Image (cartoon, rainbow, N blue to C red; front, side):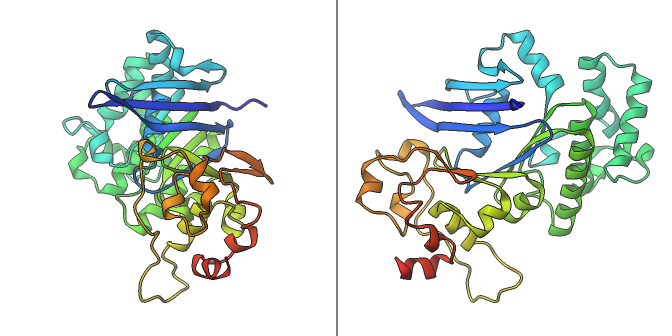
Length: 335
């Protein structure tokens, strides 16, 4: 079965001081109907730019090449009318900050029904009744009263549920969730993600889930793609990534997580700083920070290739297999 969404060798450049600079490089990823795929990595790795590319809302002067296929249609080549329909009917976005995503001068009810009336030509009364049911489905009590309230009258957790309801209301086939729980406390985060995952499964939606949190991605996603410097460096199923990471960056991310079952004086950190795609040299972008880098790594850039049931972008994957299963410190001592 062909994927619902396919990114094939996506490359995006920006014009900076008269020079074209890449921000995404060779991004290839599939998301099937009903599947949840996580995209994880440090800030600046290109996760949100990937979402913007899919929606074709790139910064002014940006140029994209490669292909972004949605159900066989190339999003990068869509004419205006087809692109507007894609954005209003086929895909929905759940943003990081719900207060920035909701019109502050509209009631919750007016905000939710606006798109249904304007883009889907639904009857206003039927639209209000349907979004009230959806609000109840996403865990908002007394939905009728909440629809009469303004965004400033709701907590962050309730507002994020409203944003999820807005995404579900347009009956999309694909949800782009761009760090939708970052601004929430841990308890609310768990509740909101549980609701989103339940609704996704119930409606058979595809989801691309952007997050810094490997634990969260592993709990709700069928596959995880790890991103660094504008490229995907590893793709695997959550348990495989946890037990048997095949890229040094994945191992470093795993080791830098806070854990409730361990006591530590300080958290492990990844040495150096994350870089953008345009800062990468001719070799592996991670090489300056990688404890396993050798001359080959700085000389030539690795390609994303199949390894086992996943994919990895590393020259030394096979010889580092046992080292990458252990903690970063243990592996560094062993190499």
